[in-house]
Structure formats: structure tokens, C-alpha cells
Image (cartoon, rainbow, N blue to C red; front, side, top):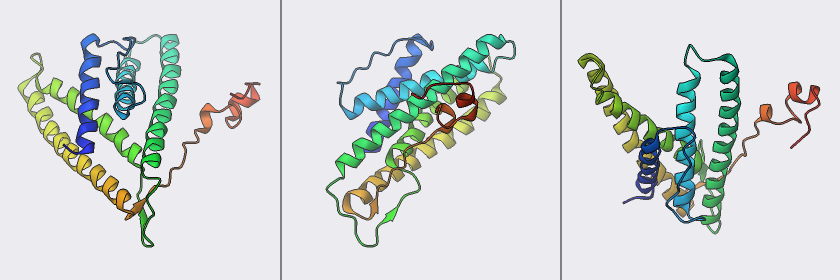
Length: 205
């Protein structure tokens, strides 16, 4: 099994495990040893799964505005946690390929390996939830058929994305491509760079 497919299996496992409790406050029980890549991948997808459902909840048209604001703040924190986790994964890849000397004609990819894995994690959630729609007993046959068509597309996307990730890592490993990671500088979360925050006297973190 290729590396990308192993990553997908971990994402899928986390997605299934989350839906056992199926609640945004369910405590994570990561089955992998701390410090392993699998542990980070599982934790990454768990963040994504919780945020997926927070995004569902906040779209309730009858939601209380105060609750909605609290949820928006929680989603903001989740987005930062997600970004931090992606950067942790890229640190892993930088270390893994640190001894590789890129060839003179090596090129850079449009995204780092970790951000590609971020898309694969979200894809695992899309596939899980689209499959649930295909299986919905209370839905019309037309709805289930439409979702089955979408599921086929998502399944093909998974095959294409895992292949592309494996090819990218192979290219980095032999020097055909090189990694150059730009840290996500999210200005709206930073009291030093968000004018609304520093105008109100927020202290830098």
C-alpha cells in the first residue's frame, strides 16, 4: 500500500471513530502512539471532522445569535488548530527529505505535501457523508441517485489525489521537486496585525 493510501486509511478510521459518538464535544481517543505520523494524521482528521459538524450547526436558520457567535469563535480556533497541524506535517516532511539535494532543474509544487494531505482528509469526510446520503432511507430515489453520482466522482478524486501525492513525494525524494514551505500568516487572528484587535487594546499572543 502506498503512503498516500495509508494516510487515507488513517483519515477514514478517524472519520468513522468520530461518528460513533457523533458529537462535536466527543473527546478524541487517538489509537496511535504520540510522535508518530499516524498520530498526527488521526488528530488532523479529528479536527476536520469536528469542524465539519460545527459548520453544519452554525447554518441552522433558527440558531440563537449568541450561540452562533460562540460557534464562529470556535470555528476560528479550529481553523488555526488545523493550520498548525498542517505545518506540523510539513515539518515532518522537511525532516524526512532534508538530506536530498534537488537537481539543478528541480521545480517547486503549487502546494506542500501537507496541504495536499489536508485536502485528502477533507475528501475522506466528503466521501463518508455522501455515502450516508446515498444510504438515507428517508430520502427520495432521485436524491439518492444524485448523491450516488457525486460519490462516484469523489471516489475518482480520491484515486487521483492519492496518486498525485505519492508522485509528489517520489519526486521530492529523488530531487525532481523541492519543498519550500510558506507558513500561514493569518493576520485576522493576530492582535499585532488585525486593526480591529489592536485598536481595542488586545495584547499580542
